[in-house]
Length: 222
Image (cartoon, rainbow, N blue to C red; front, side, top):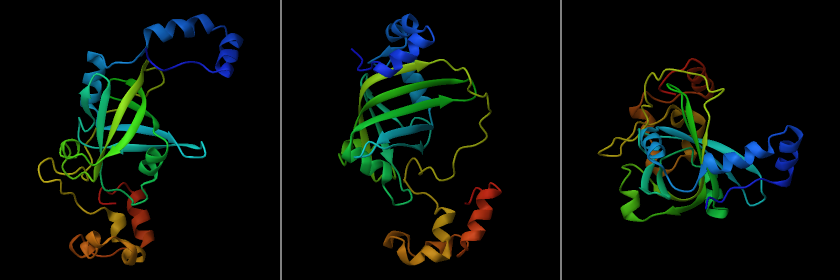
């Protein structure tokens, strides 16, 4: 049985707006604990999702995760795994997952609007069989699904995909170009050893203002 329910405050709002019976019916219709065939197809085609979690003080936040289509792998009907690629070095989301394993994942499609929510318990893993699924990954995140919620597409704008990110690791070698922010002159001394001097081969150093301008104009090298 999917581990999903309503709080007392949610019940008060349902009663206020006369949706308690509807909400109860929805538990049986849209909430489930095992991936359906449509769920599998949706996740297998996804190249992004939004990851929500709480820290050790209960403070919530959300971050964007992206990769090549299918970068979230389906292990079985109740298990997902996704990679942790090189990021900004903060390990904010991953550190909080290691502290408090409860997460939410929101998958969305904009070409034919759709969305799927996944709730689960996540663990970081260095297991070679898991990590090797994702060339370029530092480690992987295994998600044991506790509930899936199929939401209606209302309010999702219909948009056309233009192109994928140039920073998605190569599917064979795992290599990826250096991002523009790692070329900023003011941070060169604090970059990890693996990134030292890479700016010399990617167009040279830039200032923080130059990088900000690249972001503002939508420069793919930012």
